[in-house]
Image 1 (cartoon, rainbow, N blue to C red):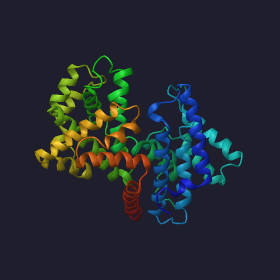
Image 2 (image 1 turned 180 degrees about the vertical axis):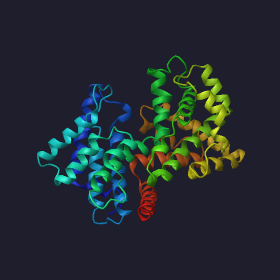
Image 3 (image 1 turned 180 degrees about the horizontal axis):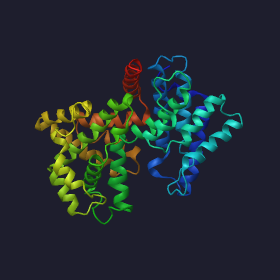
Image 4 (image 1 turned 135 degrees about the vertical axis):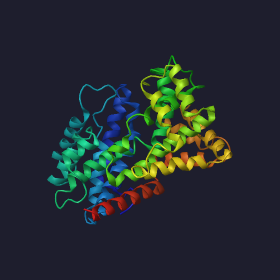
Length: 377
């Protein structure tokens, strides 16, 4: 089994339909977080299913890979079922209880071990990756009771690792920082929309990249892929800086003077570390990330110009759209042919749609990494 075939299972279809109905109702009441709308559910479910299959195949559990992918997808569909824009309690446990009602009613067609694995993954999905390891143990190298850890880490991979890095970040930052926060949030009085949307995105990108490094908490079997995704933010930042003719230091100085929020300590870090110089990340600890950043140092002027145009147009197009989806579709047609525009578009679109190329690239990378780790156990 390959691709997203698990989505054709009746339980996957039913749970996705149920969450779509619930989200439609929440949206009508103004209770739905736009950053965790239905597109978030679809992406998390898709890649939770693919991750579960990769974890099983990489350890030669070929008889369990398809079923695990179905359970991973179901957990992704329901993990945010009871999430609201303004929460008064954790949504994981109450979303798990909704899943329990479905199982008790006989709608889920799964045994007790399968139910327990999905239930616990949903209930605990708000825990950090290190906490996940304490709760479930590693999904690799177990002789028994492998399913709970596999489903829990598959859900976390879809919900945290893929949603918080790479191409997904580009569209979300362009829309939610470059538009939503500038029109309705903490950037409204500080930057002019849409003329300075790119400046707001630069500020948030610097704040994120110079904050706590998320890949430090990633499991070994997904760390290389996580580094590759993380490097895309540096490529995007380099393009936005080039468009404004800023260095990292000049940008952070300018944005601090403009009062960019939650910027405490960022200026000192940028001046001291200068990530885009390619010397900050040690090769032995971050081999993929350091190599990808160094590659940008050899870009020709024309290549940097292409990157600047593609990065700025990405922010401008999506920030001016009614939704990220509309912005991505429009971005494909913006400007003349540009390899960086094509890469950004294919990455954003491929992730959202779960394209064959995107799924295959992710699954192959993770399966191979799992196999290497399992052989060393």
